[in-house]
Image 1 (cartoon, rainbow, N blue to C red):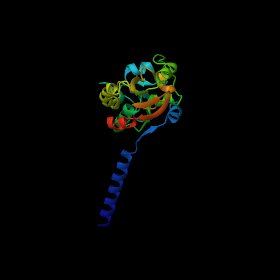
Image 2: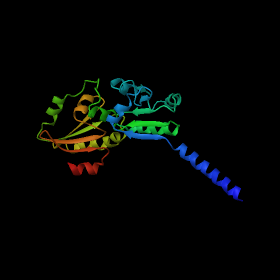
Image 3: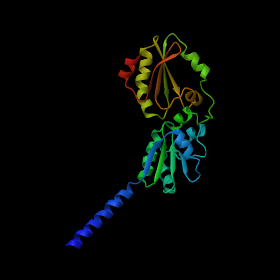
Length: 230
């Protein structure tokens, strides 16, 4: 009987340790400064999970482009060494967080996601956007130098919350005509401006009056909540 109890204890212990081992994975968000230090190691994977068009407009170092929404994402990921640390990023951090979780579920031991994506990377001075087009800082200053209120919507075509807010912002543009000017600025097409204004995530709304910022919001906000700020 004593031997049976000891055997059961051993089996239970083995099962417990085995379960612990299965969950011993690293999947975490890290800030741009730490991310920049970590990716100097050559023995890692650096993956840009955005579209090929976004990747072409700007990417970090020697990052490999594997689109999280591409049909071949799983097959490409499964060809990688699961024991090697992986660093992933996108524009705002949402798609790469999804990719990081998926890779962890597939058995990758270490997966790190760039918090705030390449938008925050640029805002903190780590990037040099190659897309020099779009609105200049001088143009933006002219835009906001108005005696009327100016509401700027910094968005991206791929951004889920941005798409969700778009219909009511379009409706408000007509409702507030003559009182508040609502302007949409695509950060993918205005990377330098987004960096100069320290846009760290999407959607970002900024309300200006007489050239001064009066209010700002990061992330999804309801129509009612936005109207209460205007």
